[in-house]
Image (cartoon, rainbow, N blue to C red; front, top):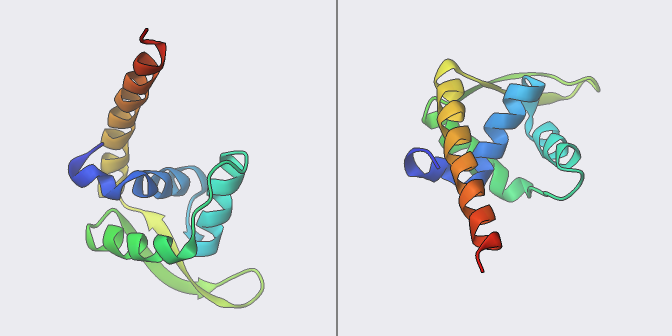
Length: 108
């Protein structure tokens, strides 16, 4: 993956989610990943929030407090320009990883 392994695949999934869905609160990110992966991927909130914090410190995402549809206060995260560049690099690296795994599966 990209520099520092993009905080692992969780970082990649979060950046991809925010690029697809736009600004979301943490639970919205969890739901999007589940739905987009046909329920195959599950992210625990306990691992999500530390990752979001690290990604925000890296400048890949930004956040702001706002009201949800149910009138509750929540922190919404969005992709930054730097995050978009990081996502592009990560997508290329991830595609290479997938090609390598596929080659290993075909290897006799």
